[in-house]
Picture (cartoon, rainbow, N blue to C red):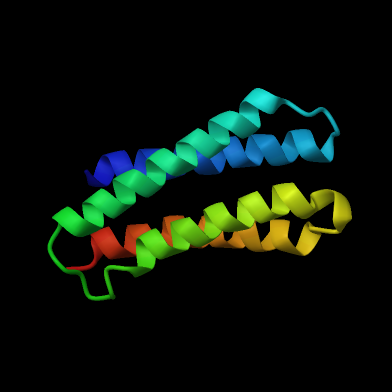
Length: 111
C-alpha cells in the first residue's frame, strides 16, 4: 500500500507539473487537467486507506489525508478563481500538494 500511495502521489505531482506547464505556455490540454484530478482522487483514496489500515504513526493519522483534501480543494478553488486573480490560491494548491507528498513519506517512514 505504501508503494501504491507513493506512485499515486508522484503521478499527481507529475501531471500537476505538466498541467502547470501548459497553463504557463497558454496551451491548455483538458485531458492533462482531468488526468491530474483523477490521479489526485486516487491518491486521496490510497492515502486514506493506508492511514486507516496501517498501524498508528507518530503523527496524527488525519494529517496526510487532510493535506491531500486541502490540496484538492485548493486546486478546485484555483481552477474556479483563476480568471479573477486566483494566483495565490494556485500557489497554495501547489504548496499543499507538495507538502501532502512529503508528509505521507514521513508518515510511512516513521517507526
